[in-house]
Length: 101
View: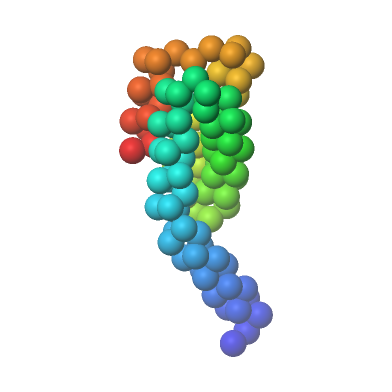
């Protein structure tokens, strides 16, 4: 196998592995969104959600899931706004939740 084919095969294996992990990651993101409705869990859940969305935005694009990466970036920016303003708009939260469904 030539060097380029070997690199392509390794990249494909990484993409496949990432695709297999995505459903679990999305499930964990949905759980964090659910935690936002509990005032005691809100701040840590929002921090974790922001962190996970940041990673998802980067990795998704890198592994060929450009649309998912763009959506994750939008959601990350919304999470950052909530963190900065210390205010959670419940209407936007519902839209946010649907986006992760």
